[in-house]
Length: 510
Image (cartoon, rainbow, N blue to C red; front, side, top):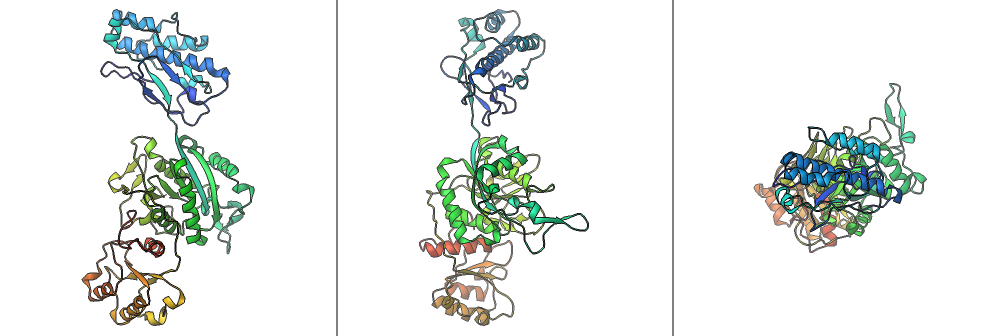
């Protein structure tokens, strides 16, 4: 609590949950200032045992007296204003209830000192009680005119409500069954297993048990949000595909109105695919959906899971805390970086900074502070329209020098493939002698083809080359550059929704 003297108004500035005594045991307790027409009220929203009501009331009374003393001290000592303010602060006044004697004496000593006093509320930790209303007596009109001391209301501001969706991956892996020590004492995966995952019906995957374990290992999460947890499935991410993407998208869509933000725990191998799928299927969602995971299980000593969880939840709830950045897209938070989900790629198999966004700037970088790049953040347009169907009959086809696609791939349409992501050289070049005849035949059979580049960054401009121009003439789609992961997912979506053109962006993917 501190006194701000601007325009002759005393204000109470927001305090953190750990500082306000009335918030002890509650997870949604920063306090904010409001000025109604009359009365001086402090209204805790949560309800605790009625036995704490008098203690909470006494502390609020003490804090209000302290603020008024500060104001009187700053405006002059011994004058009319000081005497009027003293009438407010007089312990013999009719403001009830009283602070307990031990606390009252310590506060009186602080307020009588020459320096600006401060109340150490942490010394008076009490649980929240019923709604509390304390009204100060009205000062003489001359004092009110000079001090402009209006009524102050302290109102609890709730933390963000966040749903954590667990899909599996290394973060929640059974570390004891998955890792063993080698001859040098290093922890390595048990050979031939790829890690052990808890069975879907095990007690460890019960949402209540899992959330308690998570908050026990990473208690800082309690200070960032009110968390709920849902286990969508629990598997290695290499086994997560279009069927699971639809399940996850439906879970997010069903919970959209009930939560402020969403956190998705996912394995790293296909996280870029799933993040791309959510961004396209739920285009216009307008709430943060942040993917994260880890390179080591959460229970291991050097795991990166702890920091990734804290960073991702910090970004997901950024609109609730200064500088109040409004994230409205699907993002991926890993290794101290926040990336656009449909621009991210896994670029390293075993370092903590496993993901990068070669074709688009980072949305944020986590250090001592969160360095936001607000200019790169998505500003959704249009209405929210979930698209919850995908056609998995899509194939990525990289162009390899010397390979004849008529031999390597043959008749894809005849084998049930409906769409191809063609990974060309550079800005969109390819060998014309073998690839163009094959493309002509497959396009005539009804194959949908989307071109991307094998380069991690740079523009896609196939019209600069003869073979690229010929491919465009055959009906190959070549819009702005997308990652191969995003292009494959978008092809699956466009096959189910023919009204969606491949070359038009839906969620900042190109």
